[in-house]
Image 1 (tube, each protein chain N blue to C red):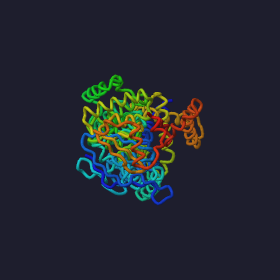
Image 2: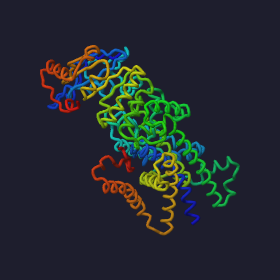
Image 3: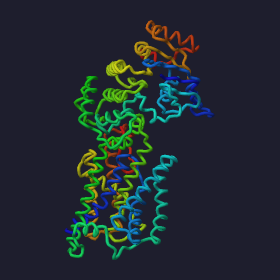
Image 4: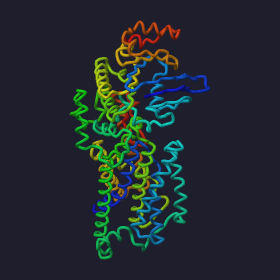
Length: 265
Length: 315
């Protein structure tokens, strides 16, 4: 489904601030995989997702999606196959437009947009049905501007928007990190439900080790631009947090020192 | 009093096209486009020249309006392809336009004395003979023609903004990253919007030329601020940020603004002060929300910024 071959990404090359964000990344993600990605700050997790979404360009290497070489496709050209949610609830929705207008734009993901009416009865019915499935009462507020919603509601809407047009790949960049724990759990439940019913290939970055172990069927740990652990479903099922930290220390030779990751448990 | 109403309606409708165009770029796309200061006299100059060389005035107005599309395209290409700052791109196009106007007209201004006007042609196509009308009747007829045109423009624009394509324009102004992630080439959307906006502005210039009977390279000075003032007046008039009311508001605001200018002239206020007064009024209208926010929540005002003269809340 996704193949990364020898991918490098360097920020600020040839300056004192040079950062090798991705250092020879090779991954092969199978169709239907739900991969959780964990790692300390600056490990290259977000860069990896940005490379896949086409927001950042690779410096070297190749990106393949469903057998197609998309390395040089700009972001808008791959959007039809990729849904992405950022950790900031303000990024994934248009604040001044209404819920139904946002959904209409997501409905047309990757399609040619012409002079078809943006909101029709048929579309409204579809939107209501989809919103009902997440149980947040948003189906009654189709004509409300998105900037009146809470962070959790916006993130839930972003989830619907990312998956409405059946993308091949879903990218989640710590999409619950900015929410309070209760809402974060709700959003995570909705995420699982959507990913399961649509059988979406998913990559999810998380700072929370428990989350990383609990969700998905594969776990990757990144450190300094490399993938240092790639744990499959069977092994992951038996994994505990102390074991994960131990493994990290053994592989990287570093002490796991990121308060945010440790405290998150 | 009569004069104020007639003037307000006639000038207000003519400049209303420009207000709609400016609303589209400044407010909806969040792209402060300075090209319009050049596009307005360009539409006027092209129309005047076309009439002088013998084109039908209706066709001449159309040509004038289409010249605006090219100007918008020029600015848009500079900004999207060459990554030139939009303010500078607009100024570069405007500067170039002066040469185009002078070359086209061969002189800084062109009179259309004794030429049939756009309005005369439209009237005669309705079976009305211009010469048989009193001045008042003629003015009423002109206003009716303009009213039909501006209502059509407003309705078309309102319909367009509700289509899938229209949504992408609004989203590009609201959250460019988001709409790009949904597969929209936002560069193309900016180009399209600039073309439509400058079409409206040049149409405004073309109609101004037909109404006053001449074109002048200097007639664009200050029209942008006047258009922004109209948009703001319209917004205050309806007191709403709803798109449909913003569109109608731009036209209503334009009429109110032009009527106020007529009143000023009637009261013998010094005309040379009008531009400064307009600029100060726009400044005031933009400053009030900023000051309010600062008083209410001093730490959050970074989320609100002034773009191109119109307050846009990105939070």
